[in-house]
Image 1 (cartoon, rainbow, N blue to C red):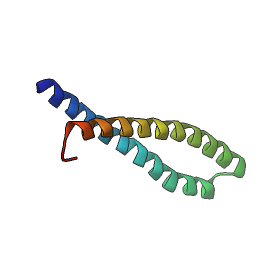
Image 2: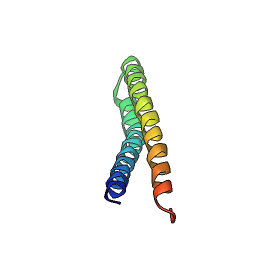
Image 3: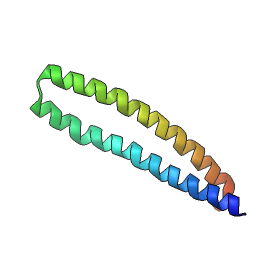
Length: 81
């Protein structure tokens, strides 16, 4: 029972961390990209958006995989989930 509680606590923590990472990426896109468009030249803006998209896309997919895995574990560990 102790091992399952430890694993479930870790799954909750990873689930929340992945959620914060994913939502943080969305907030970054919603706030930083429009502000950058107003203050950067077109070439600098395109470079920034390209690099930001590459980085956030990989973080987003990784977060989604973690969310799915930890969510399934939480589902199997709690019958009232």
